Length: 66
Image 1 (tube, rainbow, N blue to C red):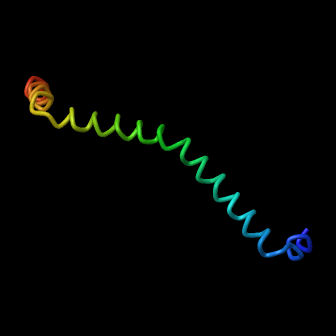
Image 2: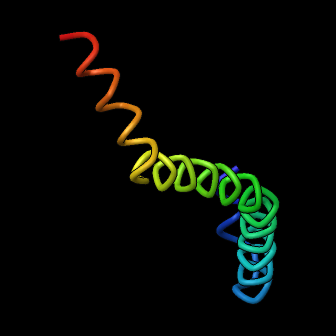
Image 3: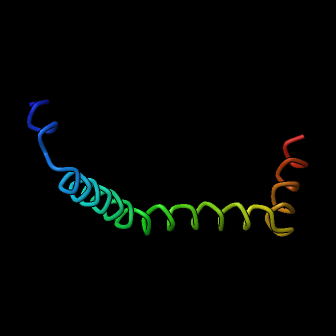
């Protein structure tokens, strides 16, 4: 198998490398919207948690438990 790749023309190797890179990028582009949506949900949850209203609710719960 190694001999097959050693005998390939360098230009053909570059074309195969470009196709491989395009495949990887295409796969990542398909996944990025899902990953972006997940990070957006997490970021929004953190921002909501940090609001004065939510922090006030959490402080009341802590005061009631003591």
